Length: 283
Length: 254
Image 1 (cartoon, rainbow over the protein chains, first blue to last red):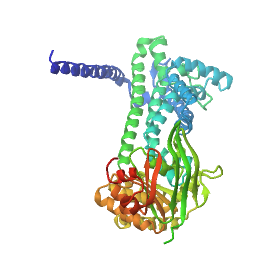
Image 2 (cartoon, rainbow over the protein chains, first blue to last red):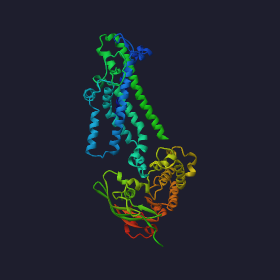
Image 3 (cartoon, rainbow over the protein chains, first blue to last red):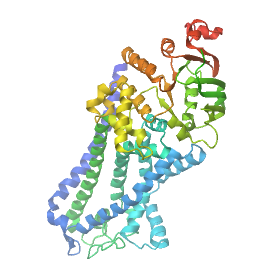
Image 4 (cartoon, rainbow over the protein chains, first blue to last red):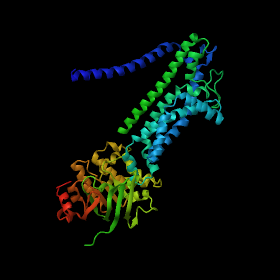
């Protein structure tokens, strides 16, 4: 076989792999879109389910997912950001720091149902927060922490050493240098990671299953200590647990479409943010 | 003629990276309002020594210093001395110009805002004065609020000098400040150094022998972590006392 031919073959294989991945993504999106678009209407987005969920909309589930996401962000973003600053800027390299990092990396591999059970024990039972928006949000926060910390550390890594040294050489304390000459340039990168982590969390079912998500609620939650309906759980119920599965199938597809659209929206906002940030650094 | 006053001095300074001894007991006098050049081949310890003079090596992991560095008679490595205060008195300009991705004005004002007690009018005055002292004012006066990243390489380095001047240091350390610049920008920096020495004490690391000969009053030759020879610059370049110095300055090795 000539060298040129092997190279072409290799190249074709790589291109085919990439194409296949895109094809699958396209098929999933097409399937959801084509079967879900028919039920999407303002009514579907703004009304609660009626008639045993066979009619009406999914507004409580949208609201629930939104509220839980807010708790997740409020909890996980500052905590993850501070942990990353500590690990990257202050912790001395050595066995302890390495162990902490390894633990964080491994946490991201823990199955989400385990987070769910852990959330029940810690938040629902031990801390007496009940099955609620708060408990579920905190559980999802734990789930996203490894991602948040890793993304924030990566963002800190991209800030040149020269910015830190330059500030220190002018008589800045370490914290002042980090606060004024490192964080401002790392935060957009941090946000990108945080948004992607959130996008994942918003689509999770297992962690909220026992910690606060409800099958059906006749009214909207009044506080963060109430139970809630959520898009992924609603989708799960409509596809597998409902007594008239064939009847609710279009609603299930509509729910899936809304969920996917929400997550795509988050991902695109992350991309947009990164783009803006690069433009700004170019000056 | 009387020798100029002593500004800083190193006394048997040893520097360790982990277990590696990078500076093997350096003793040196740095005289006030004079330019001291540190020369020597790569890896000889001249930059390490420079960074000991404002305790920038404190932030290097596994670094350890023995011996003393005196600034106006006080040991800057004494336990009661705060490295942050040392760096306010001993400023630094880096090899690669490092303007912050802020405006020109914000760059020069950065050091003035650290303590948060400098009035706005004073900041504006000192930004202008520092830019003038760094011979950059005429080129940037009408665009102080543009990004500093857009300046040319030579302008960026003079901006970094202005930024260092703004906090009113007594000593300015320069680590190969012109190594990345073209000949014209280099000439501007060298002229600037000549003017600055009226008000500041300057220590400059350079790879460029001609530059050391042109700008400095004293030259110190480092080799393998040791100070081989230090003397008046014209003496080092015309009549060095040690063979190895002569070999280096005449380009026989390096």
